[in-house]
Image 1 (cartoon, rainbow, N blue to C red):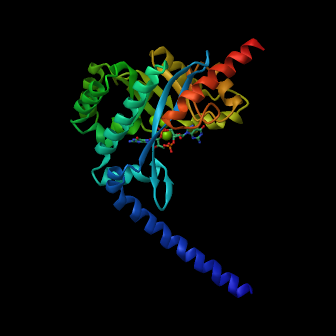
Image 2 (cartoon, rainbow, N blue to C red):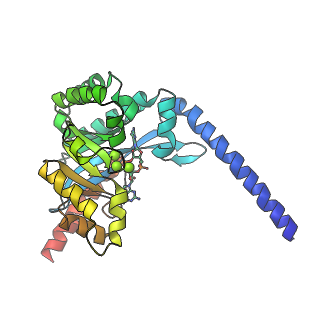
Image 3 (cartoon, rainbow, N blue to C red):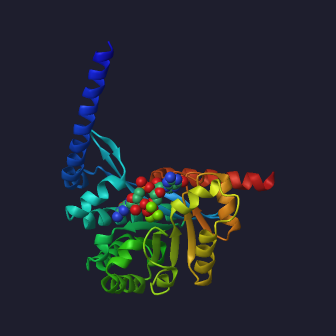
Length: 286
Ligand code: C2E
Ligand code: MG
Ligand code: MG
Ligand code: MG
């Protein structure tokens, strides 16, 4: 029985390691078809003003509903899309879906900022600014309703090209955010050189706050300097009320995380927003 079980275990392990390679292959070779087949979805996660609780924005996050593998997270397929030269198509798809929803929400009375993630590869693509411009005019969304999130490392990789692209985008009136701040190599001084409006503090700084007895000096340094430089600040990865309160007390103006809301369908956002508003109203009355 023991031997059989061991054998069985080995066998399962064999399938799993083969499965991993096969899965990687399916992900990298299937992405092009996935876009054409409409398997790439976009979900939205609310970002709130921590002081007032008001919903300020949503971040668009992509998901692949694979017919066989189930839901695949972006961390698993963005790299494949970049390698296959498909990332501009992905960006276009997410941008259109986001602006389409922005219009629908606005028509229902909720005028939200929508943030779209831009991969490092798109940032050196000189089509990006034209693509953004035509998407905005096609959906008739004002440029200042769109935020583009750029990771710190992508901006640092080729500063001269990317800064030119960033200036063009900003000239359109689009808001720019540095995403995952604190994980790359850029210094706070370097931020000053960038034409950006917003800084998103990476969740790796936020999540450990739950256990900290004292204010971590690095995090409060980031928050204070960003405020002095006039950046809007978003803390990401707020998983519980303790962390939300600590970030608020430290002067972080906006927040995003599972404690506030998980990413959801564009259609569910209106219901969520109504409930969120009513719950807050109720807690003020009580
Ligand atoms: P990101 O831009 O930093 O997005 C935030 C990620 O944190 C999302 O993961 C979100 O679901 C997750 N998150 C939000 N709140 C919490 C929380 O309280 N706790 C924890 N542990 N996680 C939280 P997701 O959706 O898996 O996306 C991962 C990354 O993939 C994104 O990180 C972004 O860099 C990239 N990505 C997502 N959508 C796109 C896209 O359309 N285009 C590009 N180029 N990249 C994308
Ligand atoms: Mg982001
Ligand atoms: Mg981020
Ligand atoms: Mg991140």
